[in-house]
Image (cartoon, rainbow, N blue to C red; front, side, top):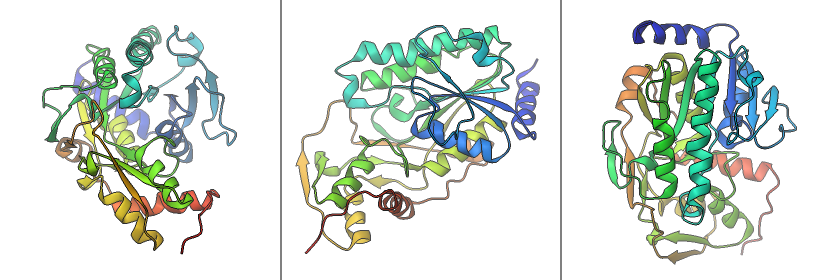
Length: 316
């Protein structure tokens, strides 16, 4: 089957009334958001994760499995689309456990590919990271990769596990944030400190420039890639603006109406000062246009934290 016809088939599958979608890493930040969106659109969702099914039941059917071991045949039975969101994330922790990152991100992806081939090669959307690019501004998909951390190298290796697979599309995500973000990620730690009376620590004086992506835009872009992305293609997904990290504590101060202490720390190894991407290909081929800017996005994450009962310190 040609790439063009295969892509048309994939688009029909996800745009149809009910597709069966397997989401690996379905208990995670992005995976759980994808599950909620797909179920709301009437698709059958099968979640696979190391962790037990979430209490909300948002992921539908659930398989608890470690992808570093062979994937059970039942996990892929009848699946139309696989969204591979499972990964061990985090640049800084990867320096302490590089082998663990390789096993969880690269080896696990290789085993998933074997299972997909055994199951008849369903459509695959493999989630990657802009960490594969390293330092630089406005990276496009053809920019040469130059990872600066074991995490980045493991994600690049995971991407390449899909080389030659008949119907796989890679999506590189850029600094996803929003309600439900992992508590160790920058915006989540900033909000917790701002609400609880703590201080925000900025490495390298917060000079890092990024193109952060709100979770709703991230989900929309991934599903656009699943529905119409070209087999064998890679797409960057990012938010609508470049943001300097030091601007986020200032934004929180404005939203909360009080000052937030900011501390400085040295730059971290493997953390580029500039890591921004261009989304022209996703806009052109997937019609991906991010809707949520940094002010609205941080305000929504802050509102969610307050609604979730995060304690608020008294201010003078």
